[in-house]
Amino acid sequence: MLDLFRSITARTAALLADNGDWSMAGRSESQYAVDVEIDRACLAMLHGAGLAVLSEESGITNPDGRPLEAAPDALVVVDPLDGSTNASLGLPWCATALCLVLDGVSSVAHVSNLRTGTRFEAIRGKGASRDGRPIRVAPPVALGGAVIGVNSRPPESFRPRQHRGMGATALDITSVAASGSGGGFDGTIDFDDDMIGVWDYLTSVLILEEAGGVAADALGRDLLTLDHAARRRPVTATSAGLLDQLLAAAN
Image 1: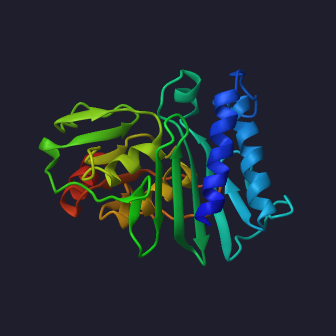
Image 2: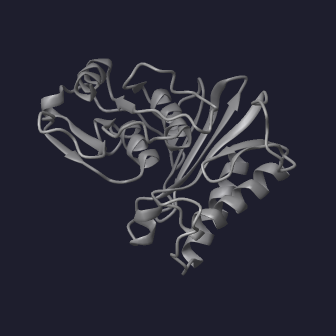
């Protein structure tokens, strides 16, 4: 499965590198034409491997491309181009994220930074890696000493040591996963009003958990959902103590 995921992200990186059209697709307010093109490439390879898919851009589909009425036992959740606005600006913080869900459990994860080629992977119960080398989260830190990745504008009362809004949830969370292996965020928090789909975070949450980190929804809901219309507010951290502080800040 990881070999397939690597082949897919090699293809999506090539498509992004060759893209010169940053017009909007017209399907939604923030969907670029290249989002649709990269989604087609992902679907072709995943469906070609006999896999059902839940994609940000095209919903949930059978291997034959038809819409699914119910989730199958095996399905790949994919964000074809996370951070597309960053990509349009030439910023190196955009990715393709793929996660195999087996019997309702996220099981195999792959996130690839499409500008730098940095690859994060995990298999449930077998740890996480960056470019083939094991990664772990950083030692515990309290909120006042933490650097936190944020989605949307935080309230004035939110006072970590520093915060950053990077614009690509998948890479923000993998940064937490690798924080003890070369540096990264101590945690991430979503201050938006239920705007994040499962494709944005599910892959990276598995990588984070396999690296020793923790994650939760700000409102206590299950992070794993296969409902394309569902939205969550993911919060992640290197430790349970910091996660509790972030959850308190989120509400």
